[in-house]
Picture: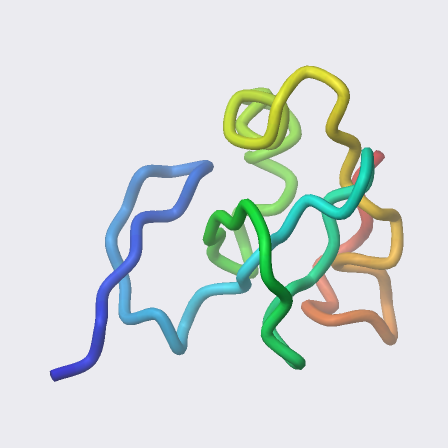
Amino acid sequence: MTPERTCIACRGRAPQSELLRLVRRGDLVVDGTSPRLPGRGGYVHHGCLDLAGKRQSIRRNFGSGAVLDPSVGAPGGSSGDGGLR
């Protein structure tokens, strides 16, 4: 059975393989999918990165000092959906 996870932005459920795993490393939230990084993690749909920024889902899930790494979602980055700050 494929594990399901909940997107921190839209709260929709999906198979883990369809979601991007984010991990807090210091104050930055980075792509923790490959290699699988240890630490506080959360999952987001590739198309929900902008929504996560608008709804403050990143800070809610990872703490008030957390900032999404600009390379997450940047062209040539992990998701190709446009970066957030």
